[in-house]
Amino acid sequence: MKFKNFKFGADLQEGLNIMGFSDPTPIQQKAIPTIQKNLDLIACAQTGTGKTAAFVLPILDKINKLKIKNKVDTIIIAPTRELAKQIDNQIEGFAYFTKTTSYPIYGGGDGIEFDNQKKALIKGVDIIICTPGRLLAHLDFNYFDTSNVKHLVLDEADRMLDMGFYDDIMKIVKNLPLKRQNLLFSATMPTKIRQLANNILKNPITINIALSKPAEGLIQKAFLVYDYQKIQLITTILKENFKNLNTILIFASSIKMVKEIHKSLKKEKIYASEMHSGLKQEVREKTIRDFKHKKNKILIATDILSRGIDIKEIKLVINYEVPNDAEDYIHRIGRTARASEKGEAITFINPKQIKKFMKIEKLMDKVIPKLDLPKGFKSAPKYIVTKKKRKFKI
Image (cartoon, rainbow, N blue to C red; front, side, top):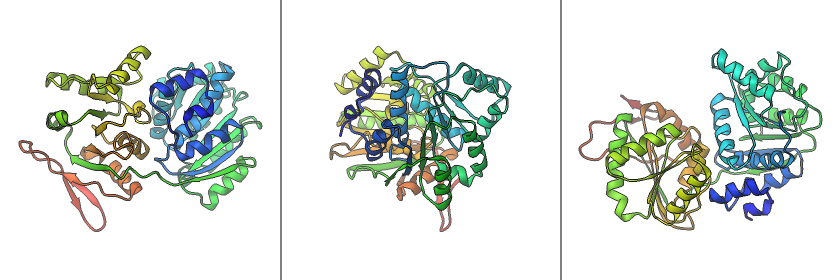
């Protein structure tokens, strides 16, 4: 099966083509047709299976075809602001060639941010991605018109229930139209999730998907490193590998960091190109073409590219930062070792990111080797392994 089999609208399909999306993951193959049929869905799918695109793409396609504006069409509820921001970033990437709008709504900000969220709800962005408590705070003021909401997505539902959000979710549901599509995604399916599903979903289709494993030909490595050492380290790696590798893909977690890496490498006379959502469409298209045709062998990108760009010759992927979510990590390293080829993925881990990386290792059931820094480097953070836990020695 190919993405073109889903018959998305021309604008959305154009974006997928340019980003290199060709083969959907198992959960996308099963979930997208179900969502297109407007059926309720309960999916047991861990991070790393491509679940976000599984519900985002068909919803984007519906919104783009309906072209109803000034009212919220879709509410995506996530347990944390970090996940809400991550989903919003992915929507931004997928919707780049459409006119669909989205806005993340979560707590922790100041009064100005609350007012911006209020304006988004009143103006009516197409999709809001929110945490339960903050959305309820807005609903209490009665300025959010929910009458046009057609899709409710509960992402990481088991985690939300563990955090005590059951009552908040049910309060939100009472404010929504009875006629809507409900999509529930959860990594596990305990009794309390079944109870939640029974109270919200109507005759749902059930899907169970296991975590996708990295390709057999992929070698994963990591360096424990301080932030100030990263440019020196990546420069050393690139100079050692550049002549022997066809193309090299560097991932950063923000547009700002992509630009900083690009500028620093340029000072070292290492020439690379950038790829992120801040670029115009024609620039992005040319950048991808040049990278595919090896006119430029090094590409620095945000996670907008981690789920696309099907180029078989990429031999090295460098994670300049540990991604915020294990799903992003798996998609990033999946850009290499494609089509039974061999590839290498290297991740830089600073002291603040070790717990995040340990979660990735736990999910993958694999400990990634931590290499010593090359000769000439000052001491790096130490990684101590005990029977009960692993930690940094600063």
